[in-house]
Amino acid sequence: MDLLHRTNMAHAKPTPTPLPPGCKLSLDMGAPLANPTRYCATIGSLQYLSLTWPDVCFAVNKLSQLMHKPTDVHLKLVKCLLRYLLGIVNHCLLLHRHSTCSVHAFYDAEWEGNKEDLSSTSAYVIYLGQNPIS
Image (cartoon, rainbow, N blue to C red; front, top):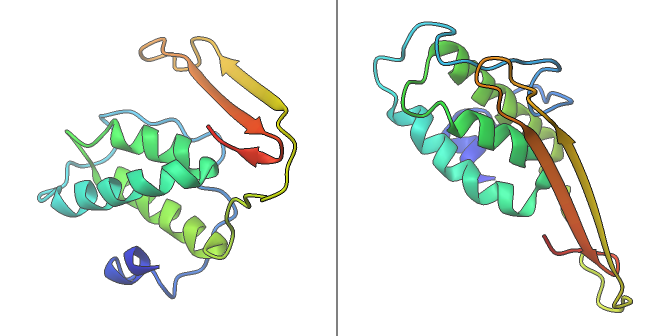
């Protein structure tokens, strides 16, 4: 994966989760980055991965909300996400050619989960047969 090589993370130790369990993100955690270009460029690249890897979608979404004021702590979390990607680089969504045409949807939500701004978190996946389509 080219992004791992560009960020010098290709030989790092993989982590089991995209973000540390129970990680609460806020704008004022850590010292502001002197040059946020690397943070923003990395998050921008990860946006494309979130389309095909649902397990990183939440982490990328949360970290992208901090792009206007990234800190050293946020950058460490981006590196944690990159180390997670290193461990799953060979995983992917399988699309089955011969599958039924049944539609199944699953949804989960946490209402007012963020006490700072009372925002809610939700996620869904829709399958057409065995294939995740959204």
